[in-house]
Length: 124
Image (tube, rainbow, N blue to C red):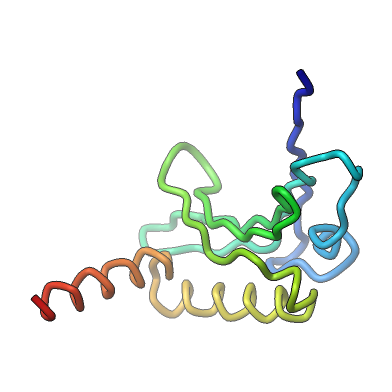
């Protein structure tokens, strides 16, 4: 059995913009199922909680996740399948997501889930 190791590459000054972030789009080994985990951006929500957006290729699909920087907590899948849209789409997604997080002072995916649940309640 092969053990898969996930590495983390840090972004400098918030949103990643360079060779490390673009590596999310390149498969490191033809037989590898999981690529290197790359830090794309950091942002802070209400109460001073720091969050990190990571990009990683899993089974050939680029995934962006939002996790707590310190300690345990809920992780959110932000987007998957960006490999078809290119690196520019990844950069735009990350910039928009971080801006929303700072504007809302909350995790954008958590707010989105709450709004979705509220809409379902009204529809009933």
